[in-house]
Image (cartoon, rainbow, N blue to C red; front, side, top):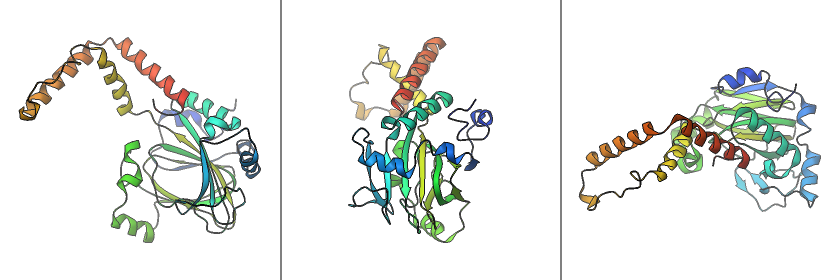
Length: 286
């Protein structure tokens, strides 16, 4: 039976066994992927009163332009963000995919004209992405991460690239290069630096973002439960600025370990499962 994941990857069972550690391309069905979005669908979204993406606009080389949103612009990329919340085919797909892999899924659309056009320059994502090419083609160049396993607070625009990285992106051969054509799906693990541009064809792809639930997320959820502990709610001592923080750190570590080990495993499981379900419902880690 076809599922959301099988529409993106060739072997869902292998995929679910472990995240791919490097970019991967999967040959899928162009006609099937076009059921999720086409250029005509983009036109209808722009003109129809019933569907409004979370945000949308025209982008050129990473900069939001003042151009009127259009599915037929000669130079700029049309971007629809948040289709997983408002566009029925993508809403249903993202919900099914999230249920299959256990992580929240978002869906954004990018429509880029032919002729060496580029919506965004070099960047990394703080989540895994599936790039499902529904029309045309786009050439993707990909470099290994300069920042490993970024969380949302490690957005590339905050950390940036040093001059050596910029020179390497400009002059060196990429670690991976794919000319993604209609019916193909490119998986890029979080942190991998990438940029795409068109050649002689326009490009329409949907980016399905896997908003990863990480070990950091799980620890945050468990620590939040500490608010119910009278011991953990205790105030730190007065004259904190004059205290020996090494001694204080040791004390806090001992308190935390004692609290965690005292929690019934079933309670911890229940908290994590509830938080995971809430995250999938909202489409982002909660």
